[in-house]
Image (cartoon, rainbow, N blue to C red; front, side, top):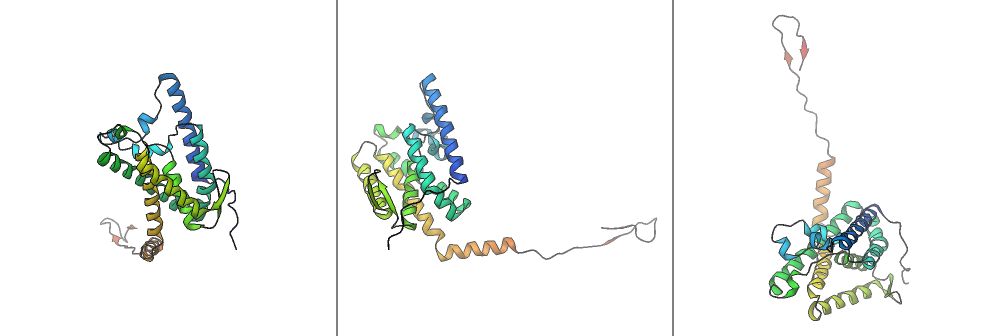
Length: 243
């Protein structure tokens, strides 16, 4: 029996905060671009030249920068429909760990490809920004957990989540080899690879054993080792106080 179509979940806390930050930064970037001609992409987007000159913070700020209203809406829907369900299932800490892992992974793969293969081209300075990489990782995670749930591809064609994810990977591979924005596609593939690696790690028996041992150590109450000794006051008998 086929699983039911994706349900609309409640927007969870972490995703709500991300959407608010994205919206505020998008408005600020739009205002700056209209007044000075330069948005926030050049400051908070991830580019090899800026990153290797000391702006390492860009590897965590770039996902919050959107290029347009479509980016805000599309990535916002992914966070709402897919991210909220994953956050509800995993919990806040694991969900944040997944997003951070996939985001940093996308940035590292992007920097590697741009530096090794595109350093002599104009694409070397093309910045990475937006939640597209994390969104791709969310789609992969959802397809792994719910492979037979129904997605609506291009808002027209219904298909199972696993096939949707296969098409997404195929499109990114094609873009990575044959389109001008190839470096961005490899960044998104990097997010999916790191996100899948994170899921594989936390589901392994060895990792579960480490977590269980850490929880036992944290919850174990240490035995009381109170030490009392008499402090004698030479001018007063019996002893005046305990210490």
